[in-house]
Image 1 (tube, rainbow, N blue to C red):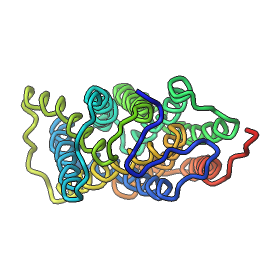
Image 2 (cartoon, helix red, strand yellow):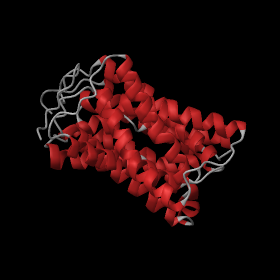
Image 3 (tube, one colour):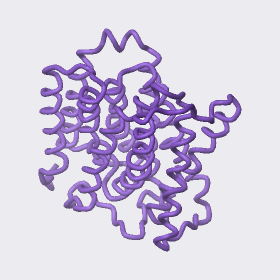
Length: 310
């Protein structure tokens, strides 16, 4: 495996290179899509089990991406020696992330679950240094510290409530670690295949353990859903899972791993705001403070040009 991924239309950038406009647009779209997904997922999980929810959402999303690739005449051929890498990537980015986060949402409010999950940039940045040899410059360390400070400010108001649900914390931390490791692994592998094909096969392969376990425990068949629950399910399949999986896979291949990870820090803020607006979850001054920290981190890492002397 080489650490310099090759894509059909992607050239990875270094820390000091200008960030590609396509990557920034996709990152903004992922932020909105995944940020809004937490309230939608919580809505679905109030009507069905995590196993049933993920069974009828992950595999259809993968099949939809395959249909889009075929319709666009994009090759779905997996190069020799890449099936093993696809399997590992699928288990980390799809199976681990989706199942751990779904179980975490059973125990935690949507906004608070998102906050714990988005400690991911910390794990991804540290793993990127160890595995990929990416440099943590002063600018990147400052951005990471600002972002984590924003997450901590939001978490600090809920430590008592969150502490009452240690299972939820454990599941969401496991989801964050799985996703962080998946980001770095996805960046490490020289895929030599189009991004949409990588994303499609990840979803299909990652759904297999979920479908198998759901069938064994008899939870694959969804119960009748309310109109709101059905809308939330369809939205989750089309936007957060189908589109955002493809878009974030593209972002990872365009940007260094730590930039890809830090760029997601605004997602939990949107998750908290969405939980407040759609589910009536509480808001306080902490949300405003966290937005200030996180926006500062994103501005520093995504918009302020890096100095060559860093």
